[in-house]
Every structure is written in structure tokens, then in C-alpha cells.
Image 1 (cartoon, rainbow, N blue to C red):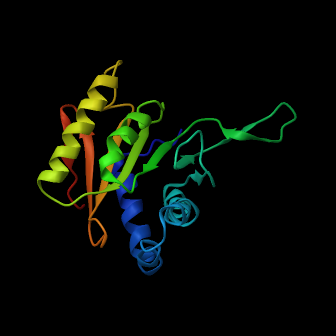
Image 2 (spheres, rainbow, N blue to C red):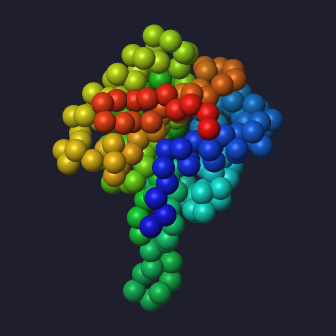
Length: 181
């Protein structure tokens, strides 16, 4: 299995967003359903290619995005309607006020990397969101392996303008801002 780290995903995300800057700017003006479709049909597949993975082209068991390495086979050897495993589970929530529910949903998936993308201004609002996410993760971490085996990445964009992205990786005691490499 090709295990993707939060840093690997961040680097791929940054590269794709640079190359898709203009189309992404246009998409931010779309209604929510169309914006989510743009992310699933354009951004996630490009990130997947950077990481040597494939991207599911529609919701996967309610996940907004799912990157995988190998598709399952049915009894006749034809591709099945599922992947053998989820390499990266992605949730994209436009409304930061609902993002804690989305973070909770991500905890239901056994994936080596879980990514939440949402929008929040820097400062107190971001800190408050991250503390909520940490409490959700800690409450669900029954095997005490989230910081090592089932890693978490939160990507926060600035609301409306999305001029900057901030990346937070979950470590033993909470989220830590990832500095540029």
C-alpha cells in the first residue's frame, strides 16, 4: 500500500492549486453543488495523479472524495464498484460551522490519511475549529493510533477569496501548523 503522509498530500494540493489557479478562482463563484463537482472532477484527480493514486469520480460511501490505489474485482475478474482500500478519505465542507460534523464523519473511515478541507479566517476562529476537531478525534481514537496510522490533515482556506491555504497535521496532542517545505 502506498501510504500518503499529510506532507505528501499538502505538496500535491499546493502544486495542483497553483496549476489550476484560474479555473479554481472561477469555481469559487459556483453554487455549492457545482463547486463540489469541480473539486471531485478536476482537483482530486490531479492530486491523485501527483500521489500515484486514482480518484473515485463520485461520492464514495458519502465521502466527497476518495483516493485509492487498487480497484476491487468481482468473481469474474471484472472491476467491481468498490476500491480494495481507501488510501485518502477527503471531505470538503463549504460551511465551517458544519465542519465539526464532517470531521466526525471522517472518523468513521479506516484510512491511512483523512483530509478535511474547509474555510475559516486566521486567528481565533481557526483556533476554535481546531480545538473542536481535536476533541472529536480524541474521543474517537479508541486504538490510540490517529497520530501514527490513521493520520489527519485539515486544510483551511480564507473565506470567499481563498487567497491562502493553511495546513494542519494532527500529532499526538493536537493539530500543528505545517510550515512550507
